[in-house]
Image 1 (cartoon, helix red, strand yellow):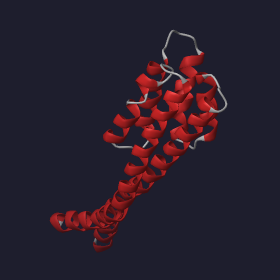
Image 2 (cartoon, rainbow, N blue to C red; image 1 turned 30 degrees about the horizontal axis):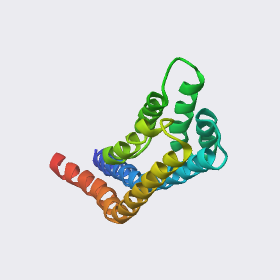
Image 3 (cartoon, one colour; image 1 turned 180 degrees about the vertical axis):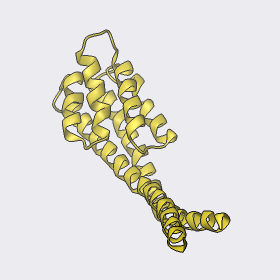
Image 4 (cartoon, helix red, strand yellow; image 1 turned 180 degrees about the horizontal axis):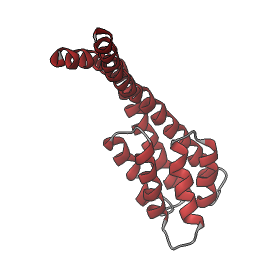
Length: 174
């Protein structure tokens, strides 16, 4: 009977520990995704300003350039513009952003900054769009730096906290 309790204790602590480690990985993925977004927006800016690529093709090429899950934003937006179902660039961008919100690790404030891009897409000349995209890139860089500072503390809290919570649950059950 003692061995059964021991196995239960180990599984409980390990389960909570794994849950905590999963939460800790969220912080690293968030920083990586912010960097990928910033680079992808830079690529989109170059496609629009220097290559004079139409928006649908520029979004498609950016989707091929970006890493998952960031590429889903651009892929979905491009797909909705190509489908010719009457979706505006703003609507297509918001649909892609919704897909990114489901699969990515970004916070609401970061998604809100990306949402601000929607009304500007395709509504002005290439230079104005480029200026706006550069502003968004700078904002994302600031958010990326802030997220990088939060990584260490957040990872420690989640990883240690998971194991500690597991131990507390075991103590309460004994």
